[in-house]
Image (cartoon, rainbow, N blue to C red):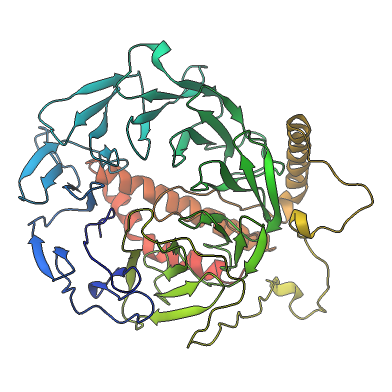
Length: 570
């Protein structure tokens, strides 16, 4: 299902959830009814107000679909293939006019990664990365390249959201001892190094994720390396950088050492939240000076989600964690509820800022597929589980423009629901076979750190640490973690993983079992699955795979099942 709002509707209840799975694509009426919509007949592009078919495309090999922000253009991508004699293949990226069905332009796009062109919100600009250049088109006229931004080895770019003028963040990876850098430009001022609004260079970056705030005044950059040379984690190392369009930049000092699982801007554009550190992870809100505003302490979490108005923040632990959520009133930093959505692979706020959907989708989990719609106070308003022989692949809210739904006062009392409150199953700690018939000890691997406003009051008020003190503390913790890792090498291995910033955005940190044999098996399985992902990317890029490589890809389902069986015991 394409994102970006290819379904046009005037909703009489709440926003519609859209569901895609093994039984097709269907729409559910929004709160409070949650019945399947009879106006949506499970077809291609429709106006769901009257079930009118707008356009149908014969694209049997299409793998990816994406609408432009205002739904004027449909972009499609299929795997690039070359002829047996080695001659170049045909263009595999097409842009269609939704109203007429006409193909506006075709491109050759070999890689699936970053396949889709990027539009400004008003569609006045469209851009795509081509070799060492970013090509810009204006007003969906793809016959002429309006402007080019040339940077040697540019590998990624992100357009700013919101109104004109559009700004562009570009990333160039380092090479031969030179640092990587991110530069900010204002379109179309690309003439020379002095034309950049801001520049931030840094080492320790094999890849980056760039996040604009809503007002397009600053970018957060998560820089990641494939290998952590300190030895503290075999999942690499991450650093967080702040770059503003006024030229200011800084490294965000994170007090706890370990992976950065997630970073999100508050829609108000003046604060952001980071979830980071070896489990149990810390979560902290920072201001535009990169100073901490509020520390949520530690907990089993790897993701953060601000509500559309920015008044509520959800901290959650999905993936290999048990689905615990903490719902916070951001203005008062008061905890609202602590619901649990076990086995969730997807989370999204409803555009009304009141409701939440969590879902368990294939292929991440093949069993127990379904979705729940919650009120943020913790009440489950709707629960749908598919039969055991069916799957759900995707769930998405119907998009709405900002400002359609008024911001309501935060509630702390759970709203009424016809469904019973879910009773979370008591978590059983994993015990190696050799210890299962022995008395249970009450020792803990760690003590959770409470939020800063729930810490015991001491006689002397503690002042927030300065940036220098935070930096020194982080270095100390890094050395301490490396020493502990070396000591624990014979019996236990840290298996925390970092967040990924794509839709659906799901960090999947792994948790140690306490059994070195189980940890070793999990680590080896993840290595094999990572190799399979690389082979699939090569195949999608048109590379001819060997027979043994194809056989490896065929084993993916069995490896995923084996990994799932091992991790369910954690």
